[in-house]
Image (cartoon, rainbow, N blue to C red; front, side):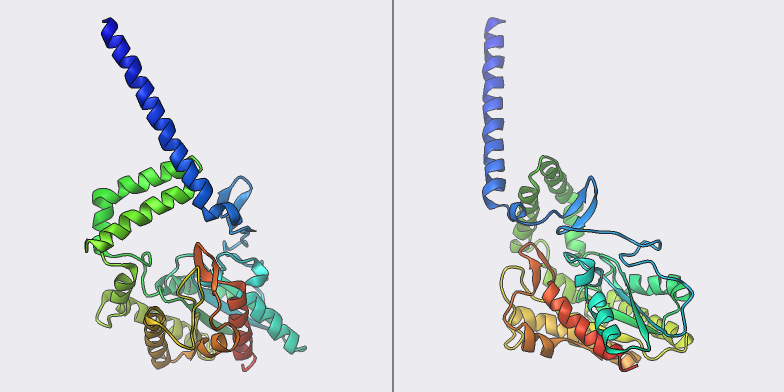
Length: 339
């Protein structure tokens, strides 16, 4: 009995020492390597939800936009902008978003017309979701013009990196990794948890178990895929709603973005990563133009103003920077002033 007690005591001491050592390693890794320490808060906190230091507030319809009167005055030209997190403004303040920049520029250019450019963007929204938002709110908004802000993953109604292989891996083993990452996050080890998940899926890609996100997303651009069919149908529906309201052709704006979070993107001399992005953009432009949208992109403007500059919000978030949103907004204002 005495020997058993001694053995239990030794075992407990060894376990405690190992746990302490593991915690020292984990917190040491988090302290020395986590970029979160130098970045503004992001996510849910006691006083609300933040996107990289910017407190998110929504209007009475649930969108990150000011409240507006449903009855529209005669001198108001109202634009309804649909989009995903790029339009919603991940990492940006309200005034930095391209819709706000466009509204200010348009109003500064005309005195007899008031422009209302209303942002109906939602994080993770695909073009199919955006079509549904338009169905639900177009009679309330009563727009004079509809704009679709296109991101390269809008052809995918699920996550950008979705694949059936990745889904099955998650069901088999991935949920355990995600659960462990959530536990680490609850102990203040958010970056460590993020690295754990990325390492798990990176190894799966290296062993050919799942495709990388580029190959997975490229499948949705296969013109015979279900995702492409749904994307095209959503654009047709948006055009039909616009026509039913007797509006000018809706606008399809390609929101060109960078390929990296930690280094510049050179639009003047595209590398293989950017060439893939451009292939997707141009294919989406082609179908939108054929359906009857007014279509444009920002390739020239990026070369003229931001070429070989980092276009991301920060090293962890690839959403467009405030400088890139300024480029978006300036061009959108010019397009709107033509109506």
